[in-house]
Length: 99
Length: 164
Image (cartoon, rainbow over all chains, first blue to last red; front, side):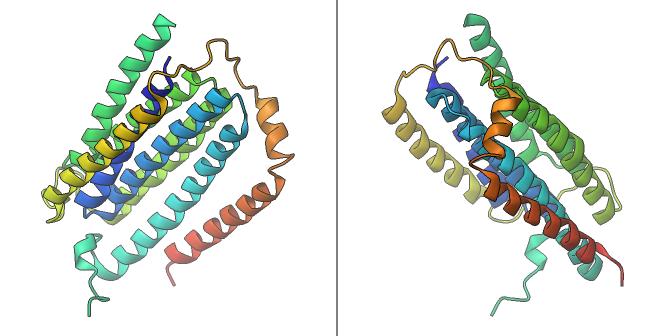
């Protein structure tokens, strides 16, 4: 197995996630795209852990999974709060901070 | 080695197709279910990369917990379950060149740096014991910080979502 096949898979998934963040305006779908990005980063970390024969990448990957779980919890809490106040979760409608 | 490469190729194609469906589908629930395919494929890739504990954690935390959160978020923010037409914003066309340029830049950098370097053939599976020795040894302080992050996230999510 080449190193590059995993790294390129991570790069492709990262770009798909970035496209999702740019193109979507539903807040829940943006959070899903962010999950794809975080998973591509995990693939990269584990590839380099295998390449260098170290376990540090595994620890980082586990920490990323834990932080992503916390991020989704808080993110969806925020989305629920926005929905309760505005009756919509479309990002385009949240324009109070526009000058 | 051949079997691993074939497995990698199949899982990678399925993952990329499912990820594309996540960012293009018109149905939020379908997007969540395609995301399950992406996450399961990522767990399979972790096993190919000899990271069994991370793969199990991926299944437990992502497919088990995070997906339930997403489905609850979908359920609580929208009354309708069917397809919706206004999920994409007006910059949708802009996203395609952004993604393709980033992919080209990263692909060039990766092929330039790693070329046809191979992963070690005789890599042994990293056991849970080695990972835990790392976490509770050199990485103990980040582990404590992570505990506080999780505690703050739990309290914050309850405070944000509470009806008062």
